[in-house]
Length: 293
Image (cartoon, rainbow, N blue to C red; front, side):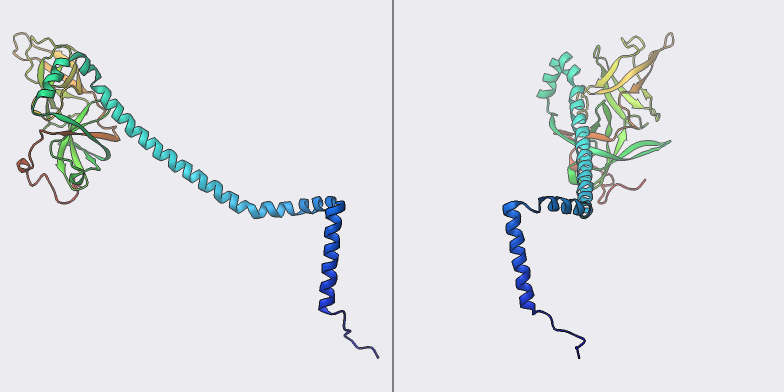
C-alpha cells in the first residue's frame, strides 16, 4: 500500500542542484553569450514596470524643480523692480546735476546735507478720502523712519512721512490739501510753493507774480529750501498759467510728475539735518503699528 504523502529530495540536495545549475548557466552565458537575446527580451518585458516605478520620483522632481524655478523667478523679478527703482531715482537728478553744478556745491557745503542712505519701502495700502490722501508703507521706527522724511519714487517726489509706527508708517502725498513743498522752475530758477489741492492730478501754485517768466510745460523741482527735501527732484509740471489784467498774482496749477496711486515701491531718503526727536509730537510716534484709519 502506497502512502498519500511521499518524501522528496532533501532541502540541502535541492539547494545544491539550484546552485550548480545557476553556476552552469552563469558560466555558459559569460563564455558563450547563450542568453543575450533572452536577456534583451526580459528587459523589454520589465521596462514598463521600471518606468511605472520611476514615474512618481520623476513627477516629484519635476514639480519641485518647477516650484523652485517659479520662486526664484519671482524673487528675481522683485529684486529687479527694486534695483530699477534705485536706478531711476538716481536718474531723476541727472538733468539737475548737469544744469545746476553751482547749486550742488552750495547744497554740499550747507549744514543740511542729505546722505546717500536710502531704503526701499513697499506700499501696503492707499488711503484716500475727501479730506486726506495717504499711503501706508511697510517700514517704521524700527527701520529708522522718522517724521517728515522725504519719500520719492522712480518718477519724482511722492510726499513725506506723516505718522510713524514701529513697523509701518503713513506717507502724506503732495496732492493732500495740507501739504506744501518749496520748488523752483528748472528753466529759470523762479521759486514758489506748491500746495496740494485734494485732487489726484492737480497741484496749486499760489502767489506767483502775474509777470513771472512761467509757462505751461515748465518743470518744477524741489528747491532744497527748508532743509526737508533735497534739491533737484522733479515735483510737477505746470499745466495752466493765466492772470487777469491788473491782478497781482497769476492763476497757476500743475500736475504731479509721479503717478501717486500706482506706485508699488517707494524710496525713503535720509536727511542728516532732520527734525530732532525732541521736536516730534508724541501723538505722531505711536508705540504700535500705524493701522487705524
